[in-house]
Length: 185
Image (cartoon, rainbow, N blue to C red; front, side):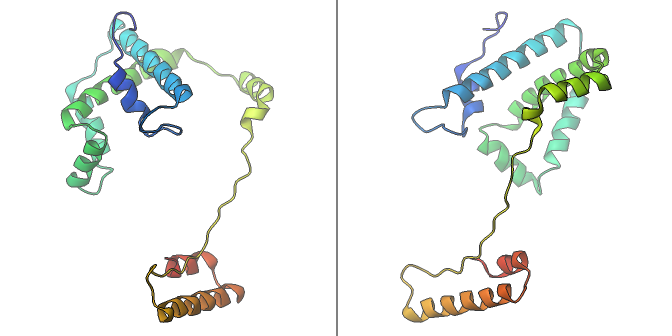
């Protein structure tokens, strides 16, 4: 409970679903704790927003949901995405109202009071350089020329011939990414 308002287990589990280390039978406790902390913080922010008199109109909520809806290629795709999240449009509207309330509160009441000077930003950076480094990354690609498990020897030979042909194009200086896009199964 947060100031008398419950955070239900189902709400936590819905947020944790699909997290790394979460299985059908168990959940990643460390991640679940972080999600719970986030739910508590959001609940406190909503409560404070309401206490400060921040209001969200139906038109604002509708605009936010319409913006989200516009990110999908069709109404059917939008409905499928909602269903995949275990939500309907009414639940989405309720969630959007809560999230927009927090956003509006932060933008109108919190952000104007925050000042970050160049000196304080540099001091934070200097004290946290280990957190500022981007780890080395690699972008790997491969070309897979496949065949069915029950393929005939002729089909296997055809796949090998195609793979050899693509390899020759790569060795001759062909664009690997384009060849991968064109030939990889």
